[in-house]
Image 1: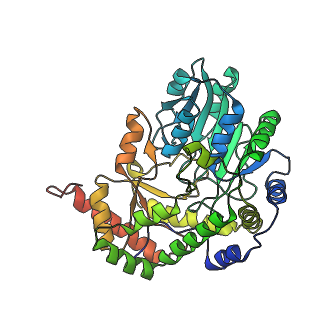
Image 2: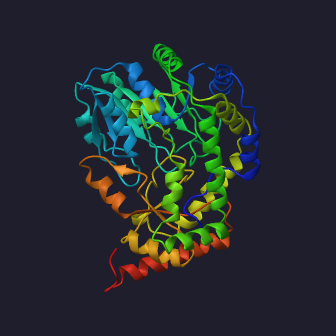
Image 3: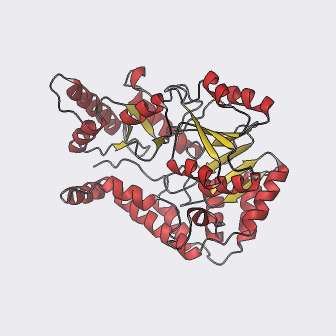
Length: 400
């Protein structure tokens, strides 16, 4: 059984993470990481992209009721962080090909209380920021790029004109360090405030990070196809989806039942995480990224443009391989019988009254593509998807 997603890490890296020194100084670890990634001094390391975004909004100090315009598809937490800071999230719909807002709609959304535009780069590609910057700059509006899914290597620091660029190294992300985020901030005064605020946050307990590493080891072991198949079959008999279990295990919000949502985000990263992320960047393998993109393209290219998402993205590395299908639930059931666990779009959402984005989410699946799989497996995957679509599109086919 092919799992829906493969962690971007192998066993030697996991052993290295577990065997790392655990008594290092977090301030020194952060300094080394930030100097390596952002030698110009415009970078800050955080626990997660959500923590970094919360830190940014706190440092910005905007008034209650001010607005942040968001592109329509993202994880639900980003909107929640905006509202937790007593700000208003104003949403603009996006196109299927570029995943960018239509310029006219974006311009209409940029009212007098808008302080920032948050653009999500999805599925390993990048939205073209130039049209967005052209609208935001004359109005003095900050442009924030959420590049959690779009990291392309250690020299990746985002669009040079973006005000803030956010990169994630959470459990499911490219070059995962089982957590951590890097943020480039163009405004030195804003960056200084962010550093000052984060310095007052509690430190992520090293023990909590160690437990997350153990959880990641368990997920990585469970994603080995024969193991995944055996576990999946056992859980399916009890009506449980192994893919859903693994997604739940991979979530990165700290476990603090006695704390508010923002308190859970307001933690500074521990030294072991920072040191491990530094090593991950120093020994980043660009060939793996190329192989991942080629593997996804070899499957996605078998389908017509009307079924593709993000064909107009810049330099897609296909962290996820998205496809629009007429009956996602039925396709997933049929592919499961063929040995492929296809995931739905439950990890992202369409925010607000956004018909194009909602239509995409309703018909979106992510194909289980990874550079580990040989061409014959990828070819069979494409064949099975095409066959399943033909069956579910036939007259009298069972609905989702």
